[in-house]
Length: 238
Image 1 (spheres, rainbow, N blue to C red):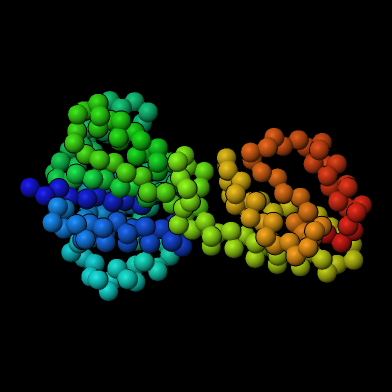
Image 2 (cartoon, helix red, strand yellow):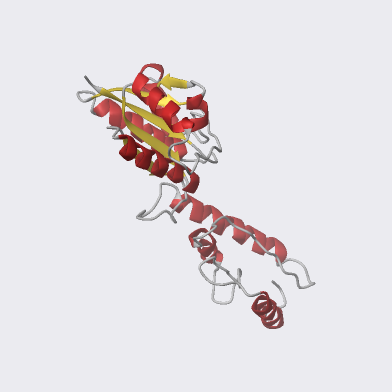
């Protein structure tokens, strides 16, 4: 009997997260000799627990899939749901009951750090329960900080967006006679590659952004004030 695929999306919607969903569905269709249907969680694990899912193999035509690949947002909907740390919590039993009801052999979850935490917990729980279900995490748009990840689907467009935005901010700030300081905060709790991409906005040495601070290096407020004073002294028009 063929096993089915279950896929969900979690966390914030992005410009390319549906391209990953497209890849999962296309992969399932391409291996139809060994795989049955591709089911989608509606609103992630939280929605799936409430019985919300759809058969993507039936509801999406080949034309729909081509549109899906280039559509921003999260087609299946999302959630911010964190599974319990204790793997013997009742919610796990309920989830595996639902997996069995749909004859799931592979479960893929598309998202960032918290979504990968969900995949890790489900995978460890499956081992404890001796379940024959494979759990796979699909990194989201810009989560290059996930371990063992070479690069994620949207890292290039994210870097370009950051560089363009910082360039526009720098041009706006440079038109006034009075020196000013503009602080731009970007995403990245533990990895600063998105912030580091702002250096692409520089046209020449000493151009803005003058100061770039990454989470990988310890931040010292006193040093920050010193850096600002030196920058203002050397380049009045920031």
